[in-house]
Image (cartoon, rainbow, N blue to C red; front, side):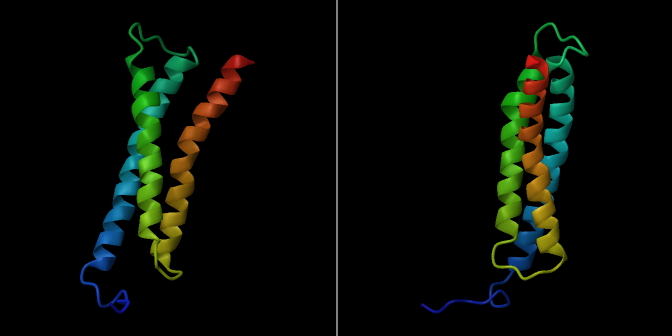
Length: 110
């Protein structure tokens, strides 16, 4: 079986563009969940049942990691163009969400 090029596979660019869109949606939703959950975690807001904290950690962090994976899949086999740069930016941005939880836990422990 011979290796197909990007132009021979129909819809390849469309699927990569959709993966970038999904990574952007994952970034926005995980940032919103992290913001609300982080405020509860740091004690700025009160949530008697801790729902925002649970959503921020148990759903927000995996969503950000899934967004980073989608962005990585979008840059697979792509040359240097705007979609590859957007993918790299989205990978870094999505991985900053779990890092923010690490920084919040270090801040709270001090």
